[in-house]
Image 1: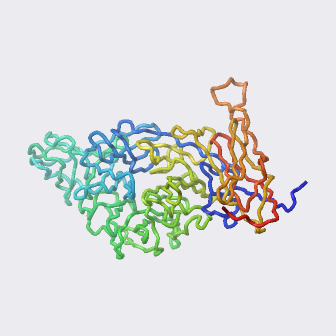
Image 2: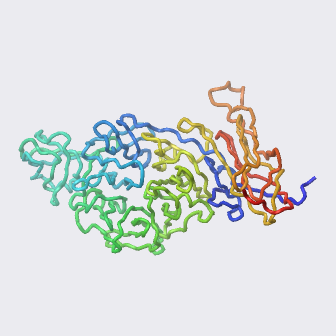
Image 3: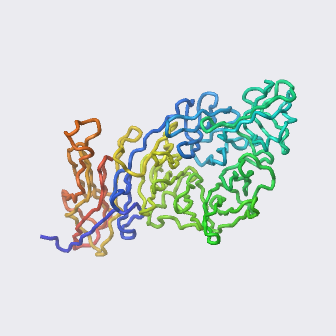
Length: 620
């Protein structure tokens, strides 16, 4: 016999929301989708996210601590890591990791004096930045001392020169060069030696005269020789060469806080403007006029490359967005060489205090502003915050404890953002995922990152330095597969799905629920726990649902023909929930938890509300 005065409620989990009350949120708003991600086959079904897997523990580094910079380029992952022992203790050391072979490249030229000082691992910071410009990867870092050393670089040009002669004088001056070495391709930071044997091993080029006929060496020659043959070499793709210094020709005014590539030049954020290198040479700045100073006087704190859709020319032309904290953004387009270098104030009065959240996406450049995630599209238009006012997730980003410590990356249709959430007790570190196709959020996920990059290698996904796990890099996938595991950094993963407070019926009465079903696939040999909570978080009822007892078959662990290949996963099923007693409430939420396992799927809840004949009870 059906319940009198009852109404059915279908709750299909659509995505994560900051909203408290489901009456004022989108249908299917969830308050937690922890370690659950959208199922690739069906909308509003959720599956456990794959575990992050350790890629490397930085063997060969002395006392490796926090990873302080990270950039993914093809199969290579470059960055810096703080060392706490050995000759480089207290310094950040560059690395290049080959994600395909699992080995680190040998980097030449590293000395303690060429490295930046490690920043504090806590509190707000000025994040180091890496940009590939031509045949060099440029590193900005606040730990560089200034003066003659303002930034660093890795040279992988493969350059060699051994047909130019010159004279040494027992000093750091090398002159009477037989050719213009700037035109010959010599660059600051390259290693140099002499056939006379009087240039000490490990000597590099510090500066080159504007006429290219004399250079300054990093070490004094041990003697004087005229007409000696000079050998100059840069690094290679398999053995990059490290150096640090300043732009040759015209030095930067101060230590830059950011760098990006634009029109083949290195653009440096320096004070209330930018300075840029020669085209095709990231460390050469021939003219002092190679700079833009912004009249508002606000320091540039970050740079973002943006492809720009031109309504005039119809194509995609590149530009750079100079971000001035949270105050302003200025678009730079054109180039000095083509006499169309121009700036355009976006005039939106927003920006970001989180430089490591700036990342390219298919819709433009994403970043976390103080009011949530915004995207600068290809017309240089700035979006409203994604998911504001309960339409998704903004509160954790608004409440970030140290905004500059946030990081983000996009790949596999997913934007991942890690943040220390000051809006929660204990201020936990959490990660939130935004799915671009579905326009939905999930999280908060465990195992947030201190730095994260898309993995452009064969495995795809992401590569990250986990928050609170020093001296290691992990890989992570945002798309589930049959090879996934669910033990992360030695711990079994768990998941949580919780609704916001279920929508109010508007009846001004208490409700009772007796009949409930849950659409789910419960993984083999697993159980899930279900908890009903009232508005104050008091428990209304609990129950447990068991899964089947059929174990999956794994390749190599059974005889061919004696078992089913793959996982014997149960079907999606409407499980009846036999509450031990009627659930009486005005509004309530349902929390479902379990261990992450292959085959688990979470879907919708069906409830039948019975409207009781008395008003809402007063909360104690």
